[in-house]
Image 1: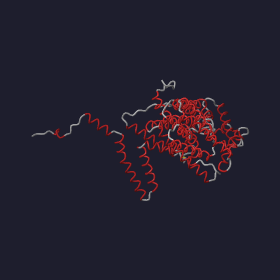
Image 2: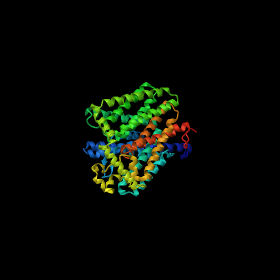
Image 3: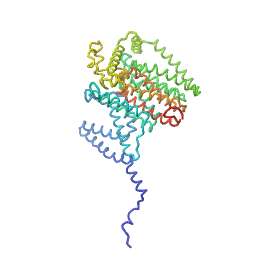
Image 4: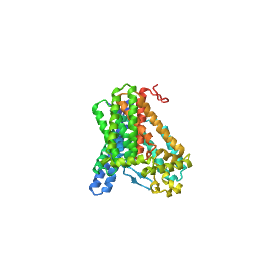
Amino acid sequence: MYVTRSAFLPVVTVKETLSYSRILHSPNALALLALAPIGAAGAASLLMLLNGRAVVAVALGAGTLLALLVLTPRVSFYIFLASLSFWVPQRLTATFAIHPFDIMLAVVFAGVALEFLLKSCGEIRSAHFDLFFLLLIAATLISGILAYRPAYSVVPLMRVVVIYLAFRVSYKFAQEIGVRRILLFYLAVVTLLSGYNFATFLMHGGRIRIFGPAMLGYEPMSMTALPIALAFMLWSRRTGDRITYGIVGVAIALGIVATEARGPMLSMLVSVPALLWFARRKARREKDYRTAGLVSLTGAGLIAVILAAAIANTGLLAGAYGRYQEFVASLRDPQGTVALRFILWKTAMRTFLDHPIAGIGVGNFRIVHEIYPELRLIPQYLLVKGMSAHNVVLHYLAETGLIGAASLLMLATSGLRTAYRTFKLKLSSGETQVSAALFIGLFVFVLSLFYMRAWTWGQGSYVMALLFGLVAAWYQQAGGRKGISKNTGRPS
């Protein structure tokens, strides 16, 4: 009996061939293949360490870890958010420093890019604020080209581009992980920082200001997280949840007290009553009497706490109370750091009036004393030199002129308007928690543009990107279900 060779070959249909190809080229299969060299590198790192070559072992081990994190972008994203808690700059040049959160963002973005390339049907979705971010980048680029010293504009321009990338990453993971989960993780990170700050403050008897490992980056984190926690508390339906979020809010407030920083305190004193006012209006409109009652109770409790703090202006609160007294007194007779801010604001306004269209160039305000040499005659000159304007709007007016400041304000107002649209929707209590948290977070961002030192660099820039990414994703999810018109923002 003669048997042909083809009889021993398996019969493979077109359908099976396609299925095998899909498996071979799937992200999971390629990720498993990538684990082999990564495992070999990890083993080599261990051998190097055992042989006494610690520096090489640490470098190889760090590279191996980063490679693993690239393959797990969701884990990397959480680590990125947690890394905002640490200010550990590694200065590479006189004008450029890299931070752990910069490295982690690069790892997350690499993982996202790899995932996109491995997906045969990968697509890039447009986000709600893409155009406004691109306008801001374009305005920054123009100001950099026309700058007093263009070399000083390179790093700030890179920062604005990185903010956009962080926004896109936040938007992506908000859709995949969930906006609520990311907000709760953010609250957990800030709560831990706040607990550390206040505990350290107590250990020093309230004699020194404590910002913790995040340094000044704690300010934008705490001033946004506190009203976010309050929003979750107001729309919680279980008593245990209300108590939990209430404790979180108190912990963050105590962390702010430990810094004795007036900017976050001002944000807290404005944003919390604003949230209560908007919450009461929404609750009454939707006949949500439980939330309306909790708003009244919370407002009464806050008034009692503020009065008690004002009366007990000794001991641990003496330093903070003194700084706030100085702030009030400076409204009539500027002194201390308040006087310095007036000088910075006046200088920024003068710079803008002299360079109204494109400014003196992004990143050039720190050398404004070279443009106006008479600043050297001011007693606070040494404090002015190298500073920001301590007012983001005035800073952008001075550095990028009308084109940059207008782009920033369009982005800010678009974000706040979008967040408010979803806040007005009648949703479930859990969804309303998210809508209210995002709205009040953007409210704080827009408000503090007029008195905070930074929102487009440092940790604050990533908090900004996170908020906008979450708002864009939530607007698409919650607003899409309710049929919000993109043109009017009203149910269609």
